[in-house]
Image (cartoon, rainbow, N blue to C red; front, side):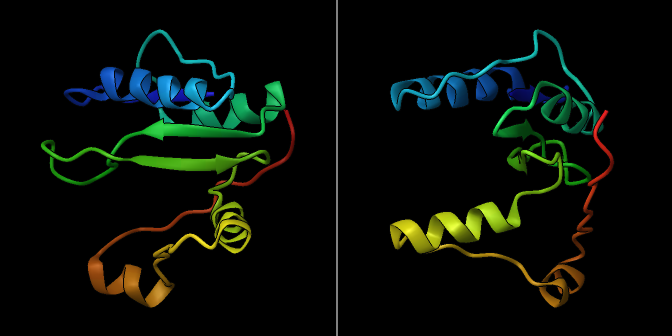
Length: 115
């Protein structure tokens, strides 16, 4: 499940993410229009997808863009990233709460009940 916000280039970035997943045999669904981040979290839980990608840079300046990954519970997928790193030996940079505070990043865990 891939959603995107209204930032310049977000829709194209979402399609590129879907193409990359498809190239690796992973089926994905992309919203047809921009959506808020909580809607992706809701859709991941309701449709029982393995994960969700939100193309956004949240509160950062408009010229930036990036993505957030939600796990199957609709919450940010920090544990999924850690597991992937352990399984593949990939180098991952995960910000700690103190890093987030220093950089002015707000980290939220939007986990909730199933819909």
